[in-house]
Image (tube, rainbow, N blue to C red):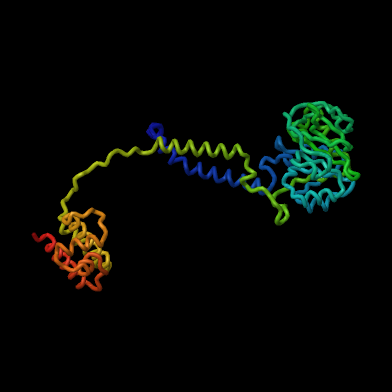
Length: 381
């Protein structure tokens, strides 16, 4: 019976039962995203030498150690300065996270640099700028760079580079004249730019000549500093993108479409209200009881001003039609017309219809009596 009952549940009932777990799941996902962004290390261990995930780089780090290369992980610029020196290699991942001051400190170590997909390569070596982006794929090196020549075909593509004329550089794995691997000499040390990091990942290391290319570029020196930057290491006061800027534009468009869909579903499922239906009251309440109840409320609250204004407003509402005045007649016109009809002076009528609040309960009772008398005078033929 319980199973049959669960099949008869409406969508609204299903949503009420599931909204708690869904909310918890969304909060967990948002928390993981924020932690991943603030830590600067992707949640799946992308290009992390400690990660055995398909997108990690533990395999290439272990092979380098087996070949006698000392691999040190650094997550701060200070650690890079402490570990790297001339004659070493520094692998820079996520260079977009680095402030200009951090780039200068990395370059000041004097070590050879291998920079992965930098948006502005000129920060690391002059004479190189971003070029057209191409689809990743397997390409032949087509250059005299020893690491590329030994590797042969390898995964490349992605970001491309443009090298200024006169710059001493090796242009490798080009398509349409745009290379995806470039190595330039900068002040006596080499700076290599990779447009596609696939050759460094666990899942692609044993494909084509990826392993030879990765080992040739990273194992050229006896010591490798593997630099994984993080937002937490930014210098104080350094300009950085907000969380809004870090989220891809497509995600925001998806959220907008989801919000529109939710509004449409809400409108579709909303209760449609028809005309107002009048129902007879279960009991008949006499008008005198209603008046007495309201009067007790005024008295308990000490609201003589509200009670007086209620009496005056009711009196004006009854007198204005009798005098042939419009419903929104101005006070001076009402006062003049009532004074002429009742035979009283305008100041006396103005005090009764628009005067100040009574000072005590006795004055409120007198006001009620005076208003009744005024109405009788106006209605007198």
